Length: 250
Image (cartoon, rainbow, N blue to C red):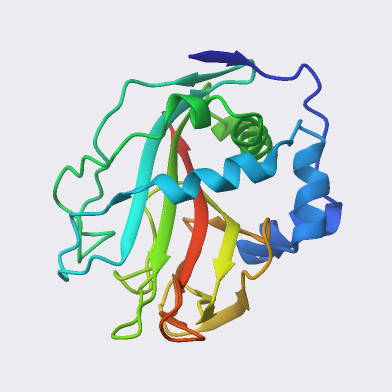
């Protein structure tokens, strides 16, 4: 599947946001600002997009033995003209970046064709790649980005917590990381914290609570992690849904 990008690549976030990213290596974007940013790229039909998180497969590669994470996965190539979905492939991270689950090829259920072509996802991919282009020095901007898309659901049960980042404070081994809140039901905690490269100096923290609250991270400059989530009301469904989009040079 290949989709043309909008010919207008001038849409951008407020300068204060890009300045914050350039200065600190990360930013938190509240839902109102994120939605306005993404709607400029054609975001629509959000409800049908978010509903697809009800149809994810269990992540069976959890080295901690947990069954609290559900996910689907897909890869794309993005140039300044097109978004092209790649053939389904495994997700791989070295143990340098993921000590818990790294070092093996992980074959997750693919993102469905419907969601791979959904207007909401295409808007997010276009906006994210344009943002990466804007923030990457011109001489380093790649001809195309290798983009990985993860649909995550972290479930919290009465007998145990769910771990959004079971590997702990980490980097992903990419260039840019975008995390979009999709849904948050009957849970507490799930605080995102950002640390300097020494892993000890906390640079900031925030909680993604509202659909389209967004975190943007320069993976070369900071570590990030999320605290475990617990049900607010035991016995009722409790989960945290996010979309994670990462970009690295092809």
